[in-house]
Length: 476
Image 1 (cartoon, helix red, strand yellow):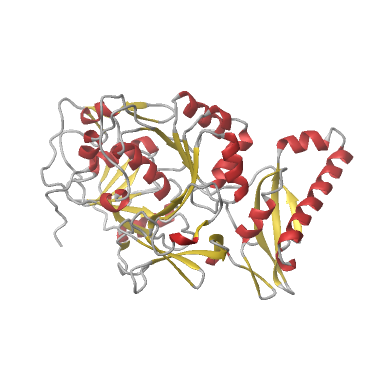
Image 2 (image 1 turned 135 degrees about the vertical axis):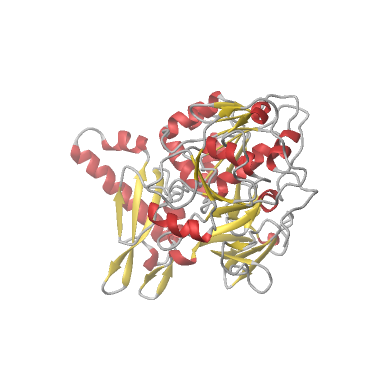
């Protein structure tokens, strides 16, 4: 198949075409780059076109460098394999082989010589506007799935068209939105925000893994962020910092995890003038749908037609999606490997119809088997998180010789709970924890079957998040 399509515009051209009279920028905690200055700023070594027609591994040390490289490489490289910051060194040889990598582009450190030519990325001025091809390549954008654990990583093949098919584009008459996200743009969720800013006439504030959440929120507020996205766990952590009030967005969106009613209600209270939405998307299926009514789950009448060009089906309780935003397949595997006979992607997310609304109950691989009964952590977390003195919870299984597993819960209580109820004496702190533990268990007993009620509730200071912003889950 010829990858060239003469009518196609590369990302750089689409970005510049979407610029109106307002100033636009992309920034991180250290650097601010004006969109108007992009034609004369490059990250590839000037004076040559080393990536032309080649398959490249993009291993940038910062999101900003990655963003600038993507703008420069789309339409030029045959394939861009976008290396996430948490990719294990041991996986690099397999990635290079699967990606048929000709060239490594890096601005950080690599563990060893990997048998491929290496070019260092660095921002540098270049006089004049670089020559662009009138016949740009339909570059493959290869993203890693956020759920990859152990074994060879799964790499999903997209193009700029599949990643942006549902996004608005074109110049705006007035000031453009200022986008921001807790996500890393080297994952699907963050990539969507990056492209929304690039193609929708906006600016972009990038976060950093090394930057405390409170500092990021303060910086986003100073930059006038208007649209901001993250997982429910990102938002719970933001609320814990006490700095969530530093921003006054007009649009807040959650995705990547189940958005339960507790976090939706809290964000609506925190940002009363904002649209608070939650969306479903996956690296393989693309963006499925967005819900803006303030309620957890999604209306049953979306099944069959979401109104955004996505077909939705429920098969054996599992959510399936089909749309033009779906990926072409896994890299160097059967391109139809995640599609069923009807062209749907089985997302692995389980839903249950309650009245006129579907509710997410968990993921297939997250099942806890308690004496032959199926338990999904997300269902129990949604109950625990309803308690007003709970910030965030994580439910997991603990091996048990009789039932196979039992349910346990880690809970981060609200700081105000600790200060108001714990007092200064150890006995008061213990009394407050005992009382809260009983209240949480009563919450669960009132709404859950007995086998779903946690056997233990442990209070912790924090709960680890994965690099994708999701709860780190394991069985003890």
